[in-house]
Length: 226
Image (tube, rainbow, N blue to C red):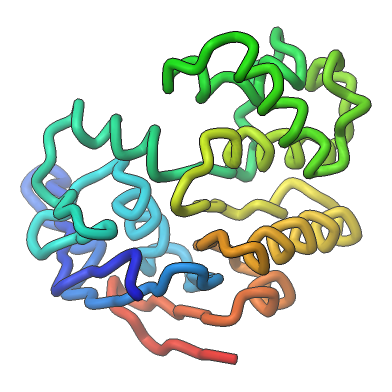
């Protein structure tokens, strides 16, 4: 069953008097519980695709269906609600709040979802345990390694039980050994049923995904499946 469908999607940016086509008629179906890697050179459209997937941007034309919702034409408030309830984000630069502890960073999306303090605390501890950081709840990001910070980011992404995890170069700031450890965490989450879509330029990282989508000039060049 598809969780994501792109139907003839276009994204055109106005650059002064010029128009730049970032996506050119992309059609794509992503099944629930699948693991996708999006690859391609700089300017291929993969970042634009990720922004639209994450409801951070809208297509110029075409349709984006997220489950049974057409999010293509939603207003900003509706897109914010979709992001909060449906999507968990993992970034290359972690995007943790340095002043907050591990626990408070993980709890952050739950605050916006309206969870009470007791529920949020229990959920944060559960997610920290899940990524192997149950003994680091009172630490701040500056006291953690890069791999540990990315694990906190994964726990935060999971906290609200999103339908999709979007990972943008999740190993980009990590050494190769730590990067593989993070990919093992994501693989385990996928085996538990989470839908994961990531952008990466590293073929060994993309190999963890069962579906690999190659972008070129705003189009889908090819899709590889294991």
